[in-house]
Amino acid sequence: MKLFAPIAILLILASCSTKSKKEGDILSERILRIENGLQPNLQIQGESIPNYNIEKRMKELGIPGVSIAIINNGEIEWAKGYGIADSLENRPVTTETLFLAGSISKPVAATRAHQLVEEGVLNLDSNVNQYLSSWNLPDNEFTENEKVTTRRILNHTAGLTVWGFPGYDKGDTIPSVSEVLDGKGNTDAVRVYKEPGESWMYSGGGYTIMQLMITDLEKKSFPEIMQSNVLMPLGMTKSTFENPLPDEFHSMAATGYRENGDEVEGKWPIYPEMAAAGLWTTPSQLILWAEEIQKIQQGQKDGLLKVKTVNEMLTPGMNDHGLGPAVNEHTFGHSGADEGFRANLVAWKEQPIAVVIMVNSDNESIIQEILLSIANEYELPGIDPMSRKVISKSIEERSPMVGTYRFPELGETYVSIKENGLEIDGEFTNVPILLLPETDSTYFNKNSGTYYTFLFEDKKVVGIQLWDHKGVKTE
Image 1: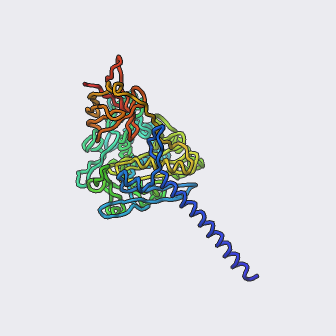
Image 2: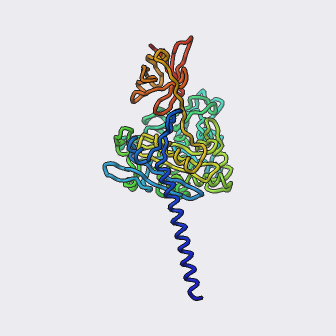
Image 3: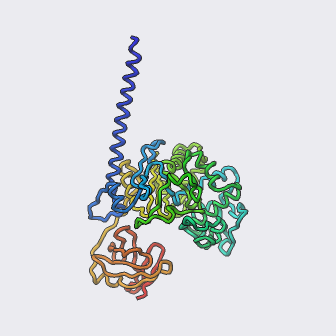
């Protein structure tokens, strides 16, 4: 009988070990399926859909490094790095490698604004000039009846200019935030160009106003404020909003690369517009923000933010944007694009799953391909490929589209006959683009799926519509 306890313990340990090994094998098989199940985002009806291996696909697309983290049921189920963080140093990407998060900085920064609202320091619907002391947003004819508010900044309905920022190179003179806002950096001044609340237009400039507003209120640097109130409480201990990136992080940081493989000047850009674009982090750290917001939303219990705050944050407004993150039927999150870096964060509203994917390249196409594989493996809704169909058009039917077009914002471009479609080449296309016909007037980019709609008057082609841009046919 004296031997019973030790034997029982050994049997329990053996059972746990076997169970743990089995769970590990199941997870390894899951990861392997994801790594070999990448699919193209653009899928043309009638054509076979290939599956890609992640490392082979990285080589095909010229993407140096990829880092992924997935949370399932409140824990990081797996995280993994692929490829190279710096090619000259031959330094591999690991789960500890830091990447620039780009515009995913915005919902993380928005967290502090929401905390200040909860503390009674801010009112979402008050004029932001009420909280700015070092700089003021100039009033004009558009602000006579409606004002720029924190709420409108958060959901991009403030009517503000400057959608994004290119960053600064090492050695550049870095402007202050107020200088950025007055157009004394490398972007235009941030100003109100239409009535606040009238419509949606993405504005990194708005988040830069919010950054200054927070620092004016708290009388501390923005990185310090974010570190003590958001990053540290979330466990994001190796993340930072500091720009330029402090020396202590250099050995951990990925180098950014252009689509052609060239290294970004100085290895990575510098963003004084920290709230809009300046967060340095890893997928395993960044996903902790998603986990916290998701836990509050799904459990309806207060956490870093109150339930009421999170419910409001995740209520979609114009263009499916909440008060910080983008919000769709099944998911919330944000994408990010800094010079030499791309990223995406997606968290599901009905399932306790979230994913962060970060790459050190201007080429972001692999991110959606990985997401499609993950969504397929976990049977998750809301991540779908772009579907297009091709119809047959004779040369005679395509000939009226041939000619020169001028876009006020994008410059001049030329359309010609090419293969079974058209080719467009000009000032805004880095390389000639093959367009395939889907309808009599609508063609799409063979690589990206982007639509180009030809405009007719009296059965004659007079222009092209590309997103919100209209090009007029000049000859």
